[in-house]
Length: 309
Image 1: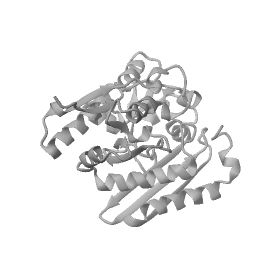
Image 2: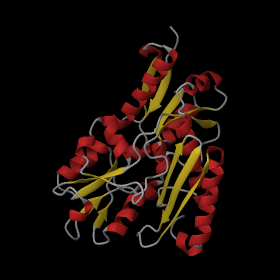
Image 3: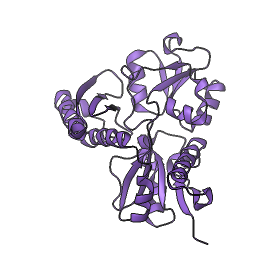
Image 4: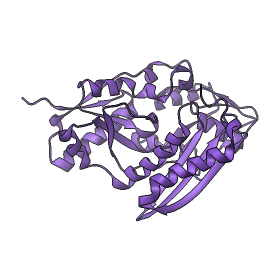
C-alpha cells in the first residue's frame, strides 16, 4: 500500500480544523479519497510553554519549529500553519507554497460581564498574549490592567469564565473556523484596530524541490490571498517583525487594485505611526516594503528601542 501524504499540524482544536480543511480541499481538487492523506499531530514548544510570553521564550517561531523540523527530515510531506504564527524568515529548504482563501481578519472582544471594551470598569484585567493587541488596547483604554494570557481558544475562554480576567481578545477567523463566533461580544473594526500580518489566513509549507507536493498544493492556492500575504510578509521583513514587535498590517485586493494599511506601535501604546497606500497588484510587495521603510524613517531610531534584543 502506498504511504499516505502526511499533513503536519499542531494539536489544538483550531489547528486540527485547519488541517482538515486543507485535506478536504485537496481531496476535492484532485478527486482523491480521504485515506490518501494522514494528519500528523506534532507538539510544539509554543504549545508547551504556557507560563510566560513567547517574546521571553524565543518568539512566535516556537509554534512552527518542531513542525518545520519534521518537514525537513521527511516525517511529514506538508505543513499547515496559521499565517500569523510564521516567523519572518522561512528556514532554508522550505517554502510557503499555498494559502487558502482568507477568513475575516478582525479581532473580537469577549467580556465576562460586559459586551464592549468601553463598558469595562476602570482598572479591569484583560488577558492577551499579543503585544499588538495590548498596545492597541492601551491606546483605547490606558487604565486597564493587561495580563499575559496564553493557551488555545478553549483554554482562554475557560480562564475568562473562571474570572481570571474580565475580558480577552481573540481572532474572529479562528472562532468562525471552530463554529464558536457566537461567543464574540464586540467585533473590532479593522481600520481602528488593525490585524496582525497574516491574520485569518492558513498557509501550506512544503520542502523546496518537492515537485509532487508542490503540484498537489498549487491546485488549492488562492491567488489573491497569496499576493496579499506576500506583501504583508514583506512589510514584516523590513521591520524584522517578531513577538516583541507590535506591528499591524492589512492588505486587500479587489481585481487589480491593492490597498494596504500598516502600523507600528510602542509596546505601551503611547506612540504610533501608520501608513495607507494603494496601487496595482503587481506593485503590492514593493509598495508594502516601501511603506515599512517610510515608517522606519518617520518613527526614528528611538522609537524602536526595546523592540529587539
